[in-house]
Image (cartoon, rainbow, N blue to C red):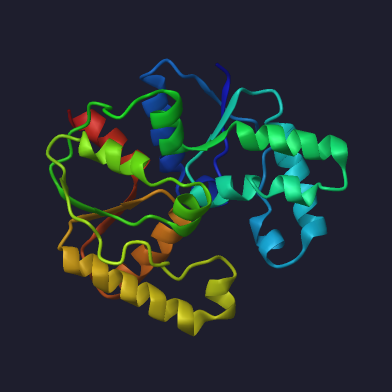
Length: 242
């Protein structure tokens, strides 16, 4: 199979180790991941702000970048979810609409691909720490990613999983929302980190670095010694320790 990595802006610019962890984990199952250099932002900031013309421009670039692969995988439920909006952007362009539908059908969030496509739930990892999990809104609600990350963590040796109270509540990031309504956003992330503290977990994991960056920033501001990781990072670190 021909698999391409859609790295997303935050992982590419700020958290490249997430993409590295994904590629190294997949290599263990014989999956060689390609990286089209022409890929760019998914267009979500423009789309959510009502600038659909600009969103179409970036969406077209993404569609063309991944046109020749069998699968597209991403470390972000949010950005993968944006791909699901592409057909709506091209409703009046039959050719691009068909291409958008094709891309949507072969695009997967990382844990979806591991569990649903490769059939992997046990990567052979060991991670002897107390861990809690934040399910980001777009991944869980738009893509329906709920069981996959839990199935993967359940197979990690030594991992003590602690459910996060009110886990499905938004962390307050929401892209432009965090800028336009910063007071509300700040209150939401403070509430989220309160719940993280309740678990007494050593590590918080998630599937979207935008949300994790927001929560991590609040934890650091409050001097809370909780390590924040993408699940791909945890699994790869656990494989190296096994």
